Amino acid sequence: MAKKSSSLAKTIGQSLALLQDGVDYAVESGCKALKKASEKKSEPKKDENKYLSSAKKFGKNALNFLGVMGDEYYKKYEKIKANKTKR
Image 1 (cartoon, rainbow, N blue to C red):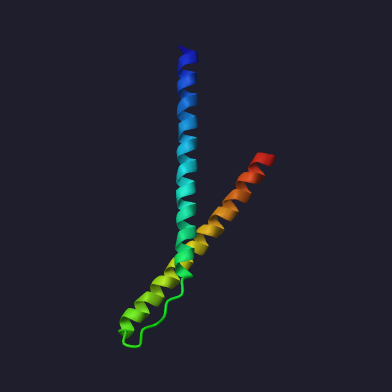
Image 2: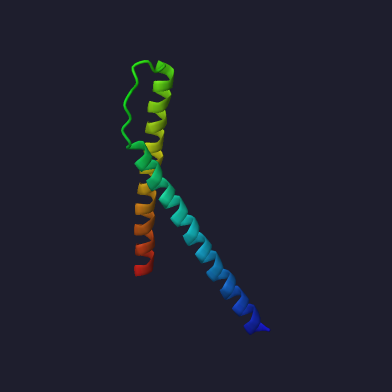
């Protein structure tokens, strides 16, 4: 019985690691996409509402902020994981 529960625990642990890796990949890809979307140039329209123009500018800045924040998070996270495996 101990071998069976050990095998089950191993399988669940590996599954959770794969799930975590998938979540990390999805979030990291999302952050890169946000940053890329914020870098797209758009021509301001002369007859555009000033509030709409301000909202678009705010949105682009928010996308950039979230993208940069995510990139920096994963850079630091990778360094921490690398340091832990060296010990």
